Length: 144
Image (tube, rainbow, N blue to C red):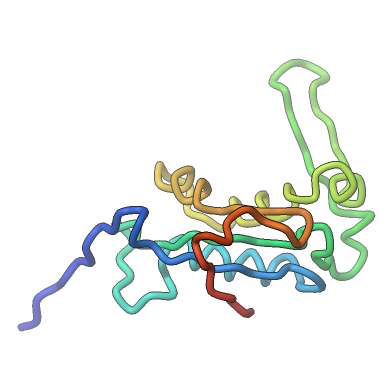
């Protein structure tokens, strides 16, 4: 009989840092890769109850690709909780105003909805351009 082993819970200093260039990458495929790295599913010692994920830096969020007619037809819905407080915004307007929201919303939708999702989202750093302030962490490039 084999024993089940659980990975040790890492502290933030021992977590790896990865960087992904989102330029001309499909949004959904990028979000799947980022969500799996945030959860730690790319590691051989993955356990759903232990948070072994890494930090992920996404650059060039402004240039992420939306396939088909999603640029005009995809709607981002916000609701204030009040009557008449529903607003729908097309993806093209979101890309102009807040391009990082395209990636953060897509990754959030692919994480399990529990109390660890918000903790994992804090390890996601999204930047609209090619510049980022995390060079000191020496992030490794991650490809799709």
